[in-house]
Length: 193
Image 1 (cartoon, rainbow, N blue to C red):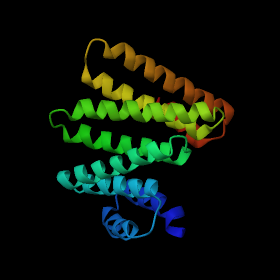
Image 2: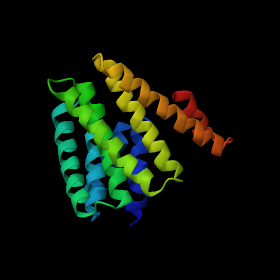
Image 3: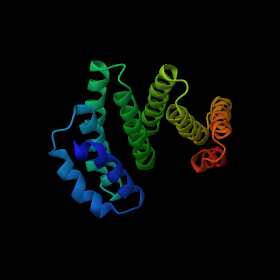
């Protein structure tokens, strides 16, 4: 239970800080802990990110595929579970980031579908809990990622859609800052919008 509660944030923090070697030790250990399937899926997604950061594309692709399949199965079994939906969305975003970086034929379209699915999941979580600052931040983040990918894809119709997504993300960030003006996180979100 202790690994379940602190393990994923710890791995995420290690990867964010660029200490890939430490994550390489912790991730395999976590894979052998008896975790619920949705957490196992997120461990696999973090493993994909680990391999991505090490330049190991085939291993990253395999880990992301396993993660997304595990989490998709969990979404079917537990379609209204907020933890499952949130972690599925996070894994989709990590996989999309990998696909965009890898840049093989078909990757951009699949990444776009992952971004859209992550946004759909975040919207469901927000609809279930409209007062949740975390759900608002998740929707805003998904909107920004999707808008960025649309803007870089460059199709004529993408510009208006991307602009609408960026605008809505900014409005959500402004709303979060208005609700908590002393929040450094909310201020950063507005600056990023």
